[in-house]
Image (cartoon, rainbow, N blue to C red; front, top):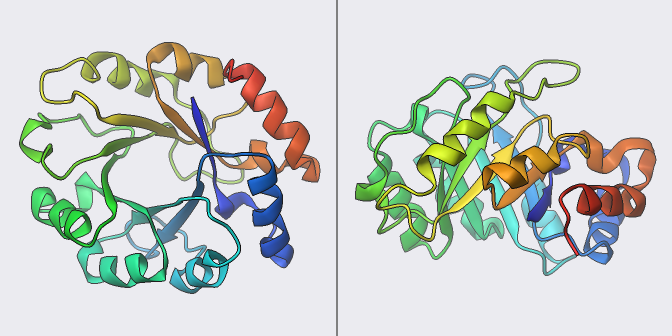
Length: 216
């Protein structure tokens, strides 16, 4: 399983040092959430942090656009250095069109789903769709609650015709105690936030998460 630490959960007072340490920990990508304060009731990182950090690492930048009308910001995010972008099915009236915009700009395109949203037939999106991001928690504070029932969507849809080769990513409330559940459900990658940065022990936390997911 690939691990994508979410920089939304990182301490922001020394983010450059954190990025360098995560690269030393051999994570697979860095995950950014960009919100509009409307689609979800929070706002954290913006596009400038992506461009400011891009020169510090060769790790892929995985950007999750939690916003309405994401197409208005996609070119800016790709220009800032994003390698992968996911947009929400709930926020796109024409998801195939939006995924094509990402694809045509040279980035991998993903479609994200809130926990309550059923997954439709994805075959018609396949020419532009590289990965599916399933939220396994809702934006609750202070600590998001992991919703294991969302993993059933991975089990049910990963083997459906038209989804061959898609990467299935889970995001929300994941930590060493439940990461194994995601692996057994068939998830390919996990976005991990607070559990990566707990107590400032990035190397130790990375080792514990890898062990929980049985990652060499």
